[in-house]
Length: 281
Image (tube, rainbow, N blue to C red):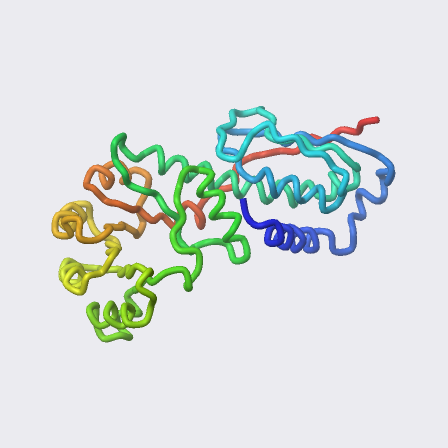
């Protein structure tokens, strides 16, 4: 998952947002001593994700709450299957319901969409599906974890995690070769140099400057095949730019090493999960 302090900080911000002024409805009609049990139920096929954050929401409100995990992150779930069960103070379960569901519906949606992309890779292909930095501000750590739960891989986590020269960097540096040479002179020898190219001419220039990774931006399929042949194993080949799941198999067969897909985070829909609550004791 992610480091506990970061997880707690994310959950605390969400609870503070939702519980500003308390919970007038719950406080009006439910005894502070009441206890309840809540069952999180899948309402559609999905890849479950978010057990830790689900549990953390309720234990922050009720340190004595007990959470049972029937589905591990990354496991598939069918409609009407119970994913997780929480038992504890009724106030805490009712107050945390929406926040917990917002998290797990989002994360399970990302994991589910990622799994679609990963399973589209043809057998025998070593192509990786990765995310991008197109994540929800403040939730990147959770969303990247959801990608891994779906079987995908992570691209660089932050700007300081790796060199990725984009079109605007190239323009500011004065060209592809100049950008690569400037990056290599600045970063440690342990850091790979990746550059985004938009044409075969830029690809050839990047290869001549010994780029470690070339990102083919919005290349047509036939151009990708030619690019892979030109690279000839001299660099890692990454494809990016509007890649739908229907293109994955063909790109994998062409020998692409990495396919980065912003859609698995920025366009993943929330899956349908409900929390059914009943009083106990």
